Image (cartoon, rainbow, N blue to C red; front, side, top):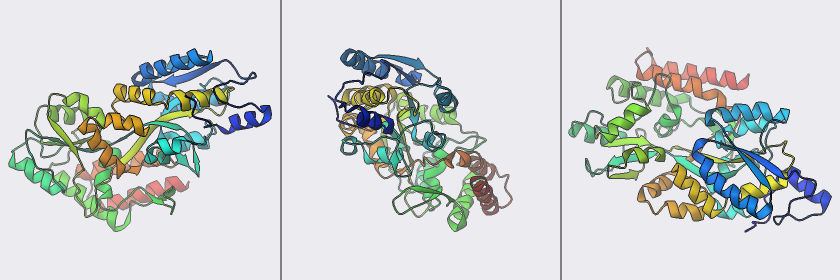
Length: 400
């Protein structure tokens, strides 16, 4: 069962000092217990993996249930005080903040490099190092009600036309909010060539905003047109979009796999997102994984738990069944793909862009979404100017 070595740096140092091999054998000077933070969605599958780990190693693991929205900040504040866990579940867009604050340890992917979906490891890579063991990837796609239409639109305008011909209440549904929702809007933006950050030759993100210029101006003008036509509307929140699609008030919904349990009563197909611009509408690909604390007293045990148990085929299938996200482990992803809807999400995600994990990502969201909402609501006298001023503000914050 043991995968060999996927060691944190501290664990590698311990191995070198002790002359001991991993192979499932804990070092004598390590604590014989671990603590892991998870949220409600992941508690049960993690508990099953932990049970096997404890049976095999004799090491007790305390599973602490946490509010997912609070984990990142609590982890950053508590690890330095010694109050944090040895392992926590988390998203890849937390990576930059966690790494800069020195609360996580990098890993060497080892054999997982061949076993994981490449985009999942790429998502957890920052400054040339991998910082978590992924368990799932997720992205947006177009969900089509096949009973309402058999048209798979290539462009946004085609989708709107179909919806209007059906006299649907909503030609196409894309959730927003009064504060905007950049994650949901990103595929539309990329179709105009307005990606969030510049990328280096190796694909890594750099802290230079790339959303401005002519591509950004064209995207802003499109937002204005859609807002005036009420195709986009900041009152269409997640709940309203979900309910409207479930009630067959629209043939199309742009959303993620988390919506599927809400529309089980519908026959749906999952397909590429129709592009409003000249380029493909490329969504973010987010990843979920397990980070190891930089302050753990048991780096080898923590590495063994995340790589041999939480990254195992059975655990990743169980996590998929509990959360509906495509597994990062390829063998488990093949199981998920037996559902054509999940296969649809996976195919769209294969062409997606990893959600930036650099620390600057935490800065952009608030200003970015507000600009979307301001333009769609018609509160901007000149959408292109509003957009460029927003980009200047974000860059100034990044540079500060």
